[in-house]
Image (tube, rainbow, N blue to C red; front, side):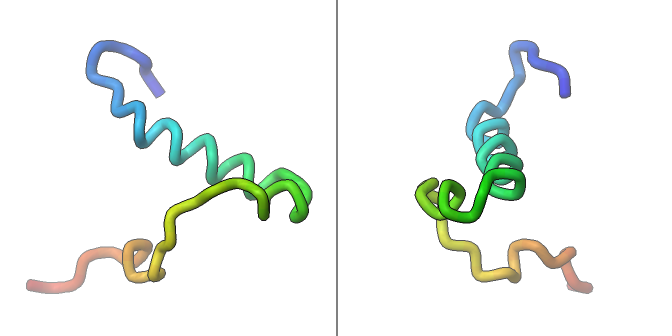
Length: 48
C-alpha cells in the first residue's frame, strides 16, 4: 500500500478495522462498530 496524495483513507480505515476484528479476541472484536454488509458485496460482479 502506497500512502501518497491519492490515499482513500476511508478504505484504509475499513481494512484496518477488518484486520483487527479478524485477529482480536471475539469479545473485543464485538465491541468495534462495523457497517452491516449483506454478503453480496463480497461477490464478484456477474455478467451484464
